[in-house]
Length: 204
Image 1 (tube, rainbow, N blue to C red):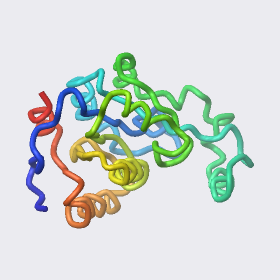
Image 2 (image 1 turned 180 degrees about the horizontal axis):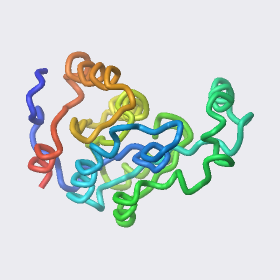
Image 3 (image 1 turned 60 degrees about the vertical axis):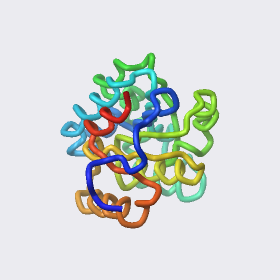
Image 4 (image 1 turned 90 degrees about the horizontal axis):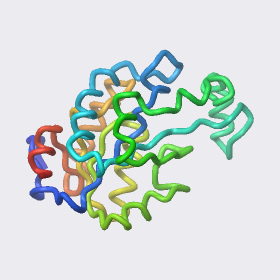
């Protein structure tokens, strides 16, 4: 597949498409150890996408553990390294969505998770099944971490996956660019990539 700004498989159904917005939270937008510097730059595009179909939005939130020493396997070591972002230190207010997106809940839904993937130990799939969903538009952050996990989980379950190219962010420009190349060249048969405007035009 090429890198043209188009949807290879035609329009998106207004009834069976869901917008999965990944981890657009204060924790990553504000002055914390996990700040994603260009989240504010892409936020207007994420808002534009959410505003297009507010009732089709599911917003994930990454929830750190309560305190260092908690966690299974490598996650325990992870939070020893990142002790300053555990809930007892960072405060629960920081896990909230950024205010511009919190305004869309409701009708948009919130899905909390404690790992990169929104598909593990969550009811995401049952929520999608209740909606009769067959397609997922993905936005948010980070391109090379939680967004990647959301995309691959969707593919594994057979959903049509569309990545909103101008509504993604990462703290690593190099990793973001590498992931976009990967989506085009390695997953191009299954992953569609397009700008928010193109997605909106195809989702009416």
